[in-house]
Length: 362
Image 1 (cartoon, rainbow, N blue to C red):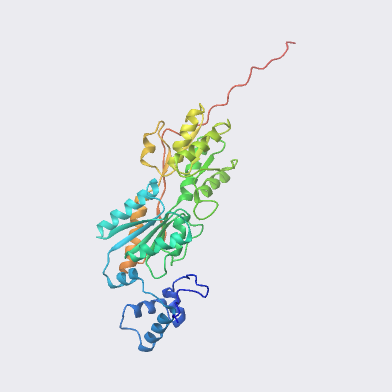
Image 2 (image 1 turned 90 degrees about the vertical axis):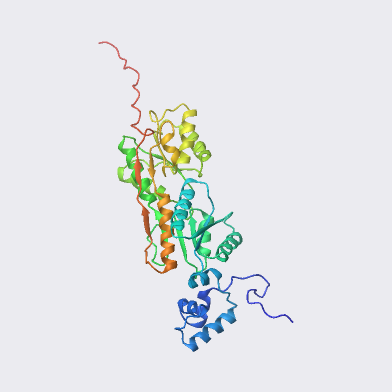
């Protein structure tokens, strides 16, 4: 007769492995007390230690190698979980993490999230955990959001997230850029040039239907009493911007377009050129992020600069403080947007004169 495997349920399907919080609940103690027990800390009463050990045995809890290594000070490493390593924002965050980690003598590994499938995400999180060290999750897409939620509670983790709708609690070590304010300022700038309204080509949102960038755009239009066109849904790259730009180029009422990132703006500029609409003579275009190529387009692109590299450095600093227990850093925006005015935005075209008036002489 085979023994019972606590990791299997009665139907033979694998269930979620017990976490340190499950052990704490079963033993009636805090998860910090469980951590002290599994790491052999002397300041735990014998009866408490025995109760925790009994819960560990009953639940089949397996101590995470990363958490133990961090507690014992035998590893100086960080793994970054991300679904993308090439888009400008993602790549710049990775650069900032690597720079800060190298300065602190930490090794950096990268785990690529190939899909948002629950099993695939769980497997990648487990691989990152087994590698040893703390975790940073870039949660700008569904896979990243799922990975951030799947990290075991006992592991030190920092999330790089979209601008939250409300400030998160202190137990969520997150960093973000103020995308809402950035889109608000870019839209206000275009309206200040005299445009009746501003159309918007949106990037996908990872956490909600309306991204912070869309919210900032709408807020600026509302405050100005400007009409609010329906946003055009783009993707992340120039191809999505090109498709959206072709749709907008056919409408003569479109005189100003804000794009959710500079790659979308690149595609929009191409579409306007193909449609014979000059920029900024007939249509003004503004981007988002200030990617390196934006200053060298023709015309050069008005955009909003976000310090993604600084965001990566801040994410590592927050994780380092948690791991070393040397700092208590509240989650907060770390990148203040900066409007960069270039050639692609200007006043709307002057109204075309109508036909001369006709009449009869008296």
